[in-house]
Length: 229
Image (cartoon, rainbow, N blue to C red; front, side):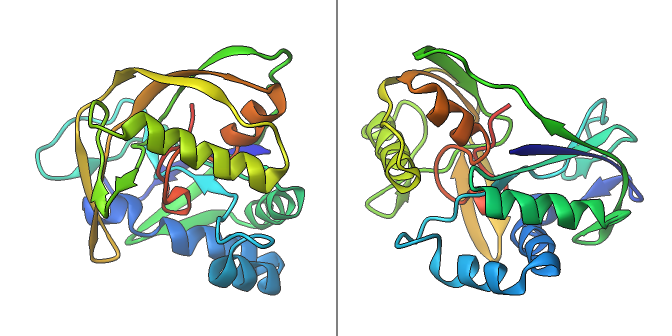
């Protein structure tokens, strides 16, 4: 399940360290408000027998925000996306969001203007194209990779294999990156995260496509990275 939350910020800009920095606290706060044990278990151990955490979200996205050097500007037309392919997690997220009239995101108050559920479904097994709204993070030998680097597509495919296995779904195949955005760097919890938005094509079971659209590509999806448009 994917949920869009329309928001308006009470500030004209966010410091860059607050673009992704608050994400993990926000999503676990929403889960914990409905099911404290679920939030604790997911945070500390992952899901099932895996350390993977099957949920994702975006940083705040603002349409029509003016460009200003050194800051992340906002507008009246903002949104956040949340999702999980696991019904128990998704249900807690929706319930937590339904109880909020604002979301604290770092130093900003995001007033909630509306909530809607994305019900799009993939209907056939075929080559699909997915584009991310936030940068994808991947690592090889403790180094962040960017599109075009050696091992990039292999590491992304391996990440998807692990997610498919956790969900009990067929693994995708034939993945390739067809377009990528510029290198982006964010400071998150006193550590740098480096990645880029990407557009990829792959062959995948429609159930897996729907699941990954609720989770995201790559690492650190609970910090707002790798969300699929």
